[in-house]
Image: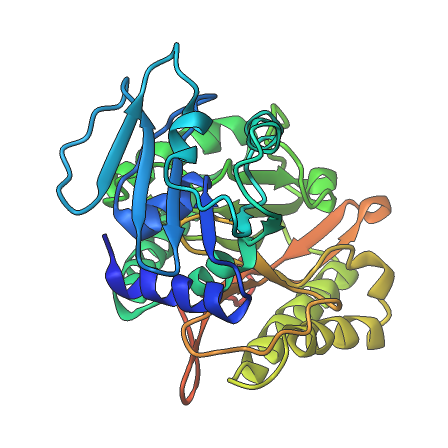
Length: 358
């Protein structure tokens, strides 16, 4: 059990007047306990209250040998919620997280195990947003592996190769470079008009001798995610493609330069979006500027116009502006991971953003 992280969650519960909290998000349980269980449809819940009572409700199919926490097992013929109810203070409110499935929540309500049910996700989400020193070190390492792997995959891709062939090679590259958890998400390798689709699924398109190639990729290492994007060109790009690339690159750099404690996430989004808009491509920047990242590739919090929370030391998020012009068969995105520091920020990525032409 990580007592420092647990105490931060309990302090947040006290601030919000939530006496008890059932956490069912698998990665949040892992974050607090270092217990990583894929329980599937079976209930897995961490009960926490303001008096520092902590219990893990776990199916007996997933036995643990852990002395730091009280573990209550149930079988497939028993109700996990009834087991949970033994700890719940019925006369007090109870927090649940946003990923608890409705079948378990409905059973809790039918059994009337608490006074009131409250969405308490923010009690853990905001804690996970601010990474501690150990987490930052792990994310730096994951990004170092990603930087090296980006160089390797760019060296590997060539005219006549299918996007999916490059994706298969990337699996091997990550393994050679030391990533111990595979992909942090399914990478996007998108050529020409496919690059103009921000969430394209890598397919059988053959890489030609004239067009852009977006490579959006990330690996897992030591339980933490990396994520970065670069766009390269096959053949000499036309003047508009060069212009688009340089606008995106500058938007990325301007947004990164602005990052410091006290500013809002929306300020960072505005820096990138305003620059792209001023240069005539605002309607082609169709997504938020970035997302928070850690044990999950998409964690709570994003860099968008509607997220007005303040940046704090230890927060890590992507900055990934893009311009997508399907009619011109051009899509450009450039992405780095940034950690907020007490004296500004640090870019976790170092791979070049200068235009690469193959």
